[in-house]
Length: 210
Image (tube, rainbow, N blue to C red; front, side):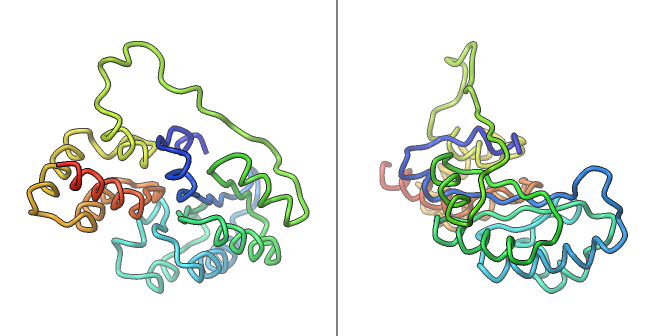
């Protein structure tokens, strides 16, 4: 999924950022899809992602809860995404999904070498890989790297630069905790790929620098 290719940060920060997308293959019948999606959701949620949801329903973290989210899944829904913060959990999720063999396309976004090794340990090779070539042109007009690291946690750009700046300022002033700020910033992200744990750490870093 190209919307997660533009995440920024140090190598250590990116080691805490993995997203799994599930989507139905093109041409696959909708019949029985809800049952398989519900099983997929149960597997993923058992590993406690920091964010989980779908564009059809919004983010589970801001909805009524996982049970209601699962109950709302229909055959018309095509997929969902989940965000994790460590490689060990990613390995366990992929292992469980491989065993379940639910018939979905699964895309994993993260550091290429680590994701490749994760697949290799499960006995298969990744189908393909996509890279971001970065931002070209008038990069001098971009906001600071501090803001871009948070903004790119939503690849669709739904978390505005101005909102990020405002939240950073409020965290520095003590009007919001980093955790509260991260929750606020995640709300506009409809794809549920926003990593609230990373956002919280970045806001805490900004607070300590003030």
